[in-house]
Amino acid sequence: MERPGGHRRPTAEPPWVRRLLIGVALVFLAIFLWVPLAAVFAQAFAKGAKAYFDSFNDPVTFAAVKLTLIAAGIAVPLNLVFGVAAAWAISKFNFPGKSLLITLIDLPFSVSPVIAGLIYVLLFGAQGLLGPWLIDHDIRIIFAVPGIVLATTFVTFPFVARELIPLMQAQGRSEEEAALSLGASGWQTFWRVTVPNIKWGLLYGIILCNARAMGEFGAVSVVSGHIRGETNTIPLHIEILYSENVVAAFAVATLLTLLALVTLCLKTWVEWRAAAESQTAEAE
Amino acid sequence: MAQRKTSPLPGFRLTLGYTLLYLSLIVLLPLAATFLKTATLTWDQFWTTVTAPRVLASYRLTFGTSLLAAMVNLVFGLLVAWVLVRYNFFGKKIVDALVDLPFALPTAVAGIALTAIYAPNGWLGKPLAALGIKAAFTPLGIFIALTFIGLPFVVRTVQPVLEDLDAEVEEAAASLGATRFQTFRYVIIPMLLPSLLTGFSLSFARALGEYGSVVFIAGNQPMKTEITALLIITKLDQYNYAEATAIAVVMLVFSFVMLLTVNLLQWWGSRFQQPH
Image 1 (cartoon, chains in turn red, orange):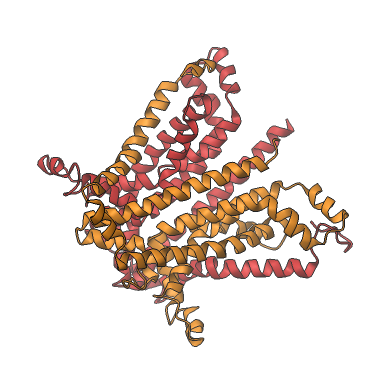
Image 2: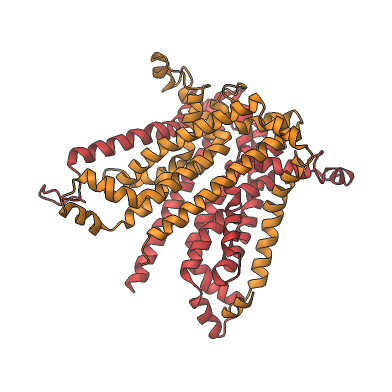
C-alpha cells in the first residue's frame, strides 16, 4: 500500500493511524487467541515434562483416543461421499428446489451441538420413539458407540458439501461434457476430470471435517453416557480429567491442540497450492 | 425434472437420490422427531415449561452475552480484516492463519484454557481480580468464551469483500476532497455492510447454541450463570425429556430464524457484487 519515498497516497492512512490499528488488532488477537493457545501448553507442562508424559500412561486415555479415531474414521468418509454426491447433483444439473436443498445441507451448522445430541436421544434412547423396539432387539445406540458416531456425523455433516458446491458450480460442466463426448465413461470422467479439478477443495473439506469430528464435545456429551474407557472420546475424557488432575487434562488437551495447529497448517498450505495452481492456469 | 435433459452428464438420479436419503436419515427425520416429542405436551404445559423463571433467566443470559460477544466481534473483526488486507507487518501470514484457531480448536480445550487464564489466580484473572473484576464463573467469563468462539466469522466474511473492493472508488472519493475517514465512513462501510451483518449474524447464531467452551468458565449457577444449552443437558440428566425437548424447540426456532436472516443477508450482499 505504501510507496517508497514517504509520499502518502490519498487512499492510504497516515503512518501513525496504521501503526495504531495494527497494534490494537494484535492486542485483541493476543488476548483472545494467542494467550489461550499458550495457556494449554503452559498448564500441561506446569509440573514438568515427566508429569506431562506420565499423563498419557493411562489405558483410559488410550481408549478415548481409540474411540475418537473410530468416530472420526466413520463420520468423515460418510460425509465425504455425501458431500461429493450432493455437489455433483447440485452443480451439474438443474432441478427445482435447489436453493432449499443447499440451505437444508447447511442446517446442522445452525443447530446447537446439545440439540444435535438430543435429537438422537429422542429417537433411539430408552424413552425415545424407537427405544422399545431397540431394547427388544438388544441394540444399543445411545450411551454406546453408534450414538457417538451418529452425533459426530450430524455436526460434521455440511463440511465437505459446502466446500465443494460453490467450487463445482463455478467450474460448470463443460470439461465433463467434453470428456464424455470424447468417449469417456461416467466414472472415468469423474475420476480423471472432476476429481483433479476439485482436489484442493476436497482436501480442505476433509481437513476441517476431521478437526471438528475429533474435537466435538456438546453433541457427543449428550449421547455418550460418560462410561470411562468405553464411551468417552478425547474431549469427554478431558472434561473428566479436568475435575481430577488438571495437568493430565491439559496434557491430553495438547494432543487436540496440536491437531488443531496441524489442521491450520494444512489449511494454509492447501489455500496456497490452490492459489498457485489457479495462477498458472490463468497464465496459460 | 424436464430440465435434466439439458445436461448429458450421468448420475443425476443416483447422486440426488443419495443426497436426499442421507440428508433425511441423518438430519431431517431426527429433527422432525424432536418436534413430534413436544407434541406429547399440551400447549399449556409447553408454555409453562419454556417460560419458567429459571428458563427465562437462561434466555436472558444466553442472548445478552451472545449479542455482546457478536458486537465485539463485529468491531474487532472488521479491524482485524482491515489490518490483514490493507497493511503489511512482520508475521502477517501466521497471524492470518491463526484467526481460524477457534474453528479448529475443540471447544472443550478452549473452555479449560480460558478458565485457567481467567480464574482468580490465572494469567489475566489475577490482574483483573486486583481491579476488583471477577471474570471466571460470572457472565463476563461466558462473554469471553463466546467472543473467542465467534471471532473468525466477521473476519472471514469481510476479508474477501475487502480484498475485491475497487480501488478506483476510494480514489474518486479522495479526488473529490473526502478525508480518509469520510471515505471510510461513507464509501467503504456501506459496501462492506452486507458482509459485516452476515458475519455478525453467524457469530451471534454460533454463540446462542455454544456449549463446550462456556460450560467450564460459566460456573453454571441456576438463575445466574446457567446458559440455555446447559439447562437442556440438566433436564436430560434428570430424565426430564419432555421439558428438555420443549426448551430445545424454542432454541431451534431461534436458530432457524437466524439461518433465514443469514440467507437473506447473503442474497442482499450478492446483489452488491458486480458480475466479473
